[in-house]
Each structure stands twice: as C-alpha cells, then as structure tokens.
Image 1 (cartoon, rainbow, N blue to C red):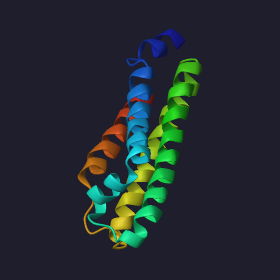
Image 2: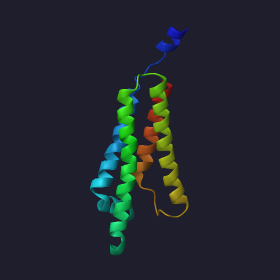
Image 3: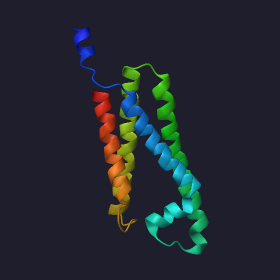
Image 4: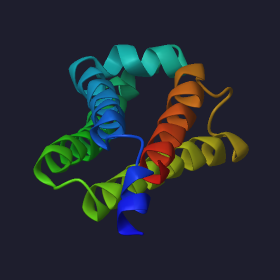
Amino acid sequence: MIIFVESLHFMNDLYAIVPASAIILIIAIRKILAPVKFNEEIFGEIHPDEINNAASMRMMIGAGFGGIGLMGLMLGFMLEAGDATTSLLYALAAAYAFMLATLLFANQKGHLHEIPKPPLVIFPVMLILCVAGAVL
C-alpha cells in the first residue's frame, strides 16, 4: 500500500518550490532596488514630501517578500522531499493567499484606485502552483 501511494507522487516538490520562491524574491529585489519607480507605476505621481517615506515603506515590504523567497529557496533545497517540503508548499501557498487577500482588501477599503494587474496574475498562479505541488 505504501508503495502504491508513493507511486502516485507525480511531481517533484522542487518544481513548485523553486519558481514560487524565486518569483517572490525577484519581485522583492525590484522593490528594494527601485522603490520610487515601483511606487509610481502603482500609484502614479507621489507628492514630493512623501516620496522618501513611500520608498522606505516599499523597501521594507520588499524585504518581507525577500525573506519569504529566501526561506522558500533555502528550505526547499535543505529539506528532504516528503512531508516537510509538502508543508513548505502549503506555507508558500498561504503566503501568496494572504498577499492576494490583502491586495483585494486594500482595494475594497478604497486605498487603491485600481488593482495592479501583475499581482492579480502572479499571486493566484503561484498559489495554484504551490497547492498543486503539495497535492500531486
């Protein structure tokens, strides 16, 4: 029975862990290296008195994203395939779901005039990838 269940494991966990972690890390690096440009792409022109405050907040958000990405990559390669990597995939899926929910909530509360399209595509796709990697 155990052999049968093991043979149903179609997907190597790293096929989901690496892209899910690397993409959020790439987003983080972009937020850290070009926070003013990143903010202007989302919000348009920012009042000159608030540029530095907004940029520092964007960089801190990038650091949080980067931390998630680094943990995913490091743990993905360090953990032995099985329950531990499956748990990591569920944790990454929860992180993407939380980020998507926060984005939608910010829009619902009126803090965003419109939701940026890249996160509306990236977050759900990575969420599905992580869940599929954990289940398959």
